[in-house]
Length: 459
Image: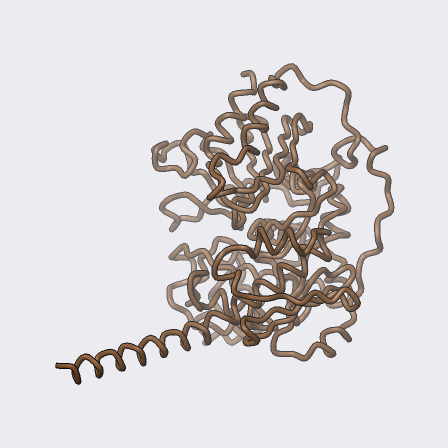
């Protein structure tokens, strides 16, 4: 009996050792990739302190397993877990931070891109929305005092064990900025990560190219890996990618090593990696949310615009035309913007992006998105049974969908929104003339936030 117990314990220890080794092999590179990239961007793009990033973004398990070395001389961050799975992210002016993967650092630092010229404008002297000068009075249609009380409420941490760290809320009514609030340490100049709200911006870049006649959403997506007509993936249209209905075999699971974690934290060319995936479903037949689709779209923009103009394109054709002067999209090691995840901007600039869609693609009297693009963006495709997704925007469903089935049951059905990890949101509610931005570290009850904001608007 004793011999059996000893044998059982040995087998158990071997199994435990195998599990630990496997966990370390699969998870440590994700931990260090995520950690080094976010520490780098939060410090060198957003201007945060190492201490605040370590405590908030990287303070919970398993991210807390990693240790970080910040090099202020070359603007880089190196992360490792007990000396293993070392990852390094580097900052380059005008490009933000890039995770070094599958290429050496020297090669990435030698990359040359034509970047947009810096915009030197005193926005405080320019009226909203192209600038930051706000009017002296606010429309009587908004109960301003009540609205400010609502915003104040959502910055109070009710549970110290489960903090949400709301950092900014901005409210626009009929295009006017009627309320905003920031957490301590943040203000209207603070750049904040949108995570998957970047997908919606990438969609807007496609819209601009459609307006210019350079792309057609119903045609097969111009992806070099699928150019052979005999390849079943050749049938994937640009619209299928926008609708998250490509049919590619790609797992979006951040709780384990999966295609999405491999793409974001281990690959140099994220779009090429995703484009190499086999087909699992008929294109256009199944909705499956995939950051890989969004990065393929980002590379389509690159190939369509061309190398000489690509890295200037978002600023020249979108950000500068909407007053989003703080916005910066970050590339992967191949130089393609990580269109699924990595864009920083101030809360006001995220609100300006929402205002572009609220105004049907027109900003400051200039049409930026093609006519009908916003309507198409807010329309689900036929196979989307829950009416929950448009062109890289989430939808709240239509009136024929039962209210209780909607994700936001207390918000009008016509709402559509850009959504990012941790509760980042740009909510566009046409029927209430509202655009609401919320930025923070963790999710909150957005349904109640929006419900309370709506209650401050007089019918």
